[in-house]
Length: 171
Image (cartoon, rainbow, N blue to C red; front, side):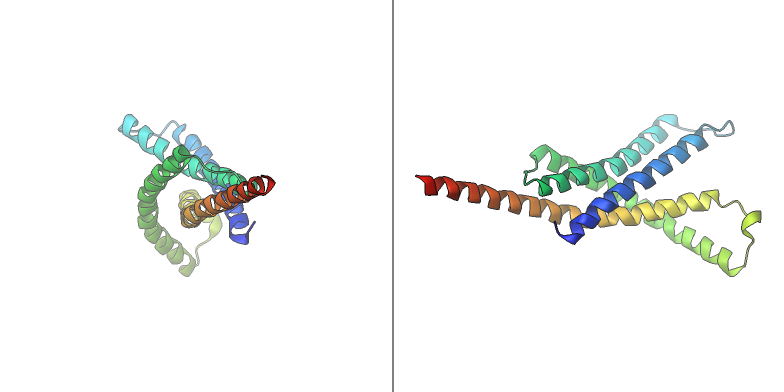
């Protein structure tokens, strides 16, 4: 298997880990007594879409890598689901990129002002940095998902042609 797809598999696992960490931290933060949610239905739908899409793409990517490894084809429903997840993630990527600018400026300011780590509550900044890392890793997955699908299709067609030629030689 080519190196970009081995790296793709590693990035899938990293995205799952970072998304899981963000999910557990969010659950912890929302369970605090001081948290009040203004519109719970809209917030729940947004969080569900975010975490569903950020968990779905790496799992779909791992199944694509498995298909490539074992010379299987991908189903049309899986390809459709990947396109839907890709579109939803693209929307969230815009929000992550928009917030990344402010986060990077804040972190640069903190390092320029020689702040003391023990006197600063950096929990929110760490979450924002984790979201930026998640966004960058997901961009890698988004870039290499469709070439991976093309490789799977090409590999499957070549295997089917090889099987077909073996059958033709026996007649």
